[in-house]
Image (cartoon, rainbow, N blue to C red; front, top):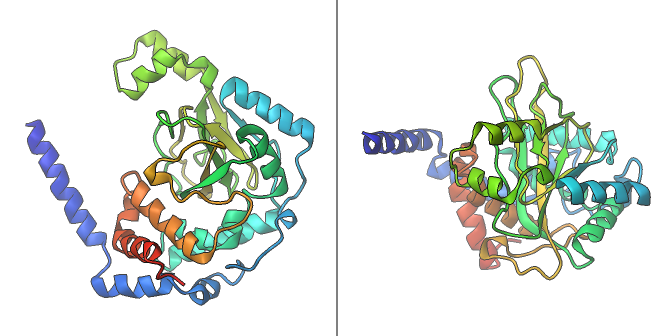
Length: 324
């Protein structure tokens, strides 16, 4: 019976995938569009593509040394931290948000926003570099794992409870909201790491039965983390976190996330090439990062599957040095 259900599920998924997939002609058209910097500039003239912008123009207020010390202290105790006020100026997050909406209207998944300078630069400001260097070492690097999350009202939600890198040490996620993340529109929730024993975490990851006492411990250790647009929320790789289901009659919750790796930490095959945390990548590397994100996250985000053929071509072209 269970085998029959599994096969039926595969058939249904295949039918839905084929229904939502681009035609071969449309796939080829979008591959050509994706390679065109001019196309992306025309689609979002308020954003920049390879414009060599100044990073320190992005910050609203620089983080003080005391603020950075407090954040790193909380990170050490509880496995996460958030800025208490926006780090990035509102006019920039507003332009980025408009960019995401324009991408969706043009039939692109929001992860394609990483063709634009701003989506790389908001996590590479002077304050962020000071903070990340203090935590990960001066030789830390960025991984080509990029995501843009779009949570629609009522039916939308963030990802279900998970950890990012339980079996990979020294990885660190930075999450950046383009809209206010509120209790009602599906803000992030985190279980404070020091409240979860290693034994309990392993049981949870292995989907083993938990006792009533263990469930109560997890629930009472949960932190709701509403944060304003332009702020920073970060957590270690083994912290349980998720986004909730959005309420009705609220604005969509839009955010992006990137991953960094500690200095002198060997990357795994799916984590290369490592990127500079100081400079924004060139255009071909941006397309590669978007393509890798589609390949890496399409299991979790079904709407990415329709871009699989496009991602495959871009990754092949990148390896063969065929992307201008």
